[in-house]
Image (spheres, rainbow, N blue to C red):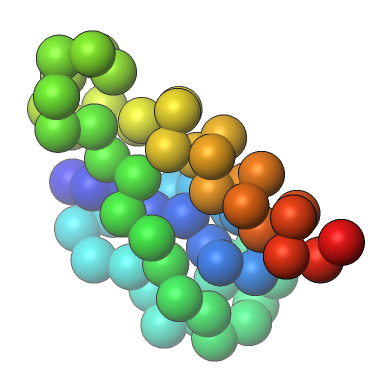
Length: 64
């Protein structure tokens, strides 16, 4: 199972494939894979919090 992050509201969920619509904001959005694949973030299959934080920060910078 992978971790996916919504491009609209930054909602994170775990699923084999991302949904067509976000369960949180109900938008048809792009989901980024934020799954950890390296030991530095906890090992394969875990949520990569560094990627989540960087993506959220980048999204906020686009707004400003």
